[in-house]
Length: 250
Image (cartoon, rainbow, N blue to C red):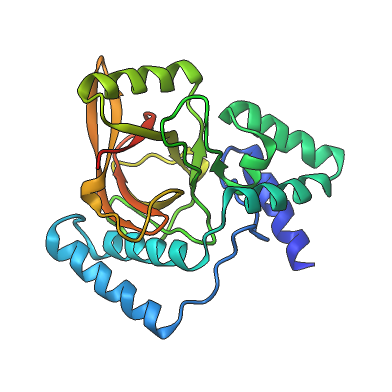
């Protein structure tokens, strides 16, 4: 019964282009252990003291998301299998809602259900799966506590190609990984979102120095702040919903 109630609630949200992730979330997070809780506290403290973020709420959101992604993140293959099963079990009316959201967000039905973007092997050098899961991720909006769900969309192919071209003009050695757009549930306005996204291909040996994120403003690339990096996760601070491209530089 609980699973059905959550499913109905999520479908209503999807119809309003808001919360896209199913509760019975394919990437349900396990409860953090005392060690993981201590890691969140330590990471949040470092984020705040370093100036990577500007509030305790932002530090907590990024640190918690990163630790949870490390603890319970799943591969693209696992997500594909689980979201396909969820879609198959829907009636036609529910499928129609998902299909409409998929068209609007330039994604597959499976990606809408799991709120992830599959690795694009045609476009990117180091194709990565990008995910924002309500089960794994938290956000701080305008430095305030109280997580709001984030909604991923895939940029149009021509938009991604423009970003890739600009990246290569900046440095031909940079390796593109993937692109996404980020909005808040219900299309709420914001000045800044601090969160972490799950990005495949990020290892436990990587640091912030290994990656850059950019948006195209006019005809130029503008850096998007990366606040943290841990295995499978990149902390990011966005100030608008323009498409973002993730790049490996080292």
